[in-house]
Length: 312
Image (tube, rainbow, N blue to C red):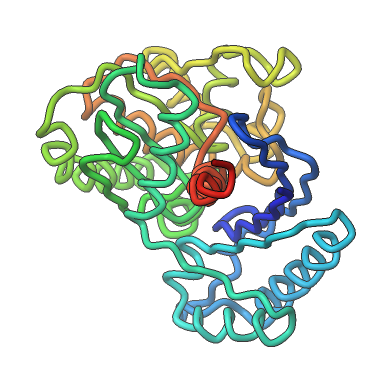
């Protein structure tokens, strides 16, 4: 089966085409994405701007055409926090549906955390034991913990790297007071849910997903992408603590020159580092393992689970 998945994220719009086979992992066949950064296209009224809406619709229509060209049999589309939180989110979805015929599902924060957790469990397997999974998106931070394929606890907090950068870090580089205020804000918010996430037991393995964590890991010395998809990567908190003051003093253009950091994400890197450091510290983790699978793969895996009866 060839499956097309359209992911409308707060930073990236991504179409992934995968092939599904009995007993095999989903095999990527084609990828098409743009860095739209929807959070930056939300006005003071909380609505996505007309330009943002038009660009969303155009990309969705382009993806429908690509999916047809690539022989996609089934098309799944979903949106996350930027659409979820926008005051005109329903209007945006209606515009996409009328123009393309796509019915995009809007995942709530807990669903994002659950699907990401599923992807991480499948990647590392049962031998990983109890997992704590952290994912820093553009609009929110997802946290989930558990021992099975679905987490016992799944939480979402409005601590996405793009959102925090827009709301808290206006300077380039930001002033020390802004950085300190953001640090307090993030830590107090995460501290409120730590007890819920470890109530059933401390994790055997702490895992991080998302572009933000991958970029931070690369800055702190993890293997580059050229070493392959399956190369183990991790992020040590000690290295992150060493880099934080450096990142806070850098301009966006300087961060963009760091290894593994894209120009589109460079402005968000400091906020992401503040969230990552707070999460690792408050959960008592001296490092996190980086998982290449995340929300999108979790959605794919959940859909493929529904095909099992067809394969028996």
